[in-house]
Image: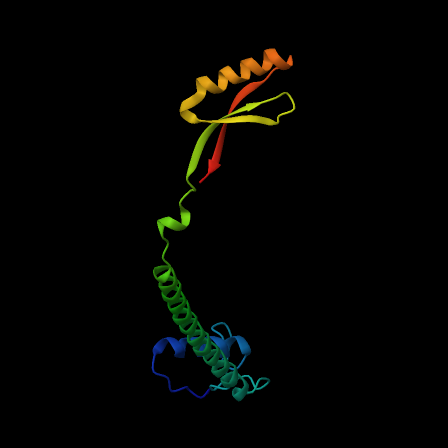
Length: 147
């Protein structure tokens, strides 16, 4: 009969028998065998070789999976460390300080005069005087300048 593998778990023995049956080394349940003889067309060594190759693939796959997990965990630790070291200050994102003025403009959008924000009435008087004097509409518009 076929040579039994010495393995640690009964699961691997079952798998080995299944592989050997599919390869023709062991008789399947429906085959009739006389005096415990096995089919001679397939070599026993090739079946054992296939089984050992499969077990090697599984172990290398497990090792690769654990290595990937270790890499992922170290990558997440590195990412969090980078985020923790990065600091932002409010002065970097602060908007510039603006000051408002009133500007008197002619029809060609050229600024004729400029007044502080509190002097809106004076800017409007100048715009009305220029409109009457030059016979062209002058207007007042707010101006915001960075200090």
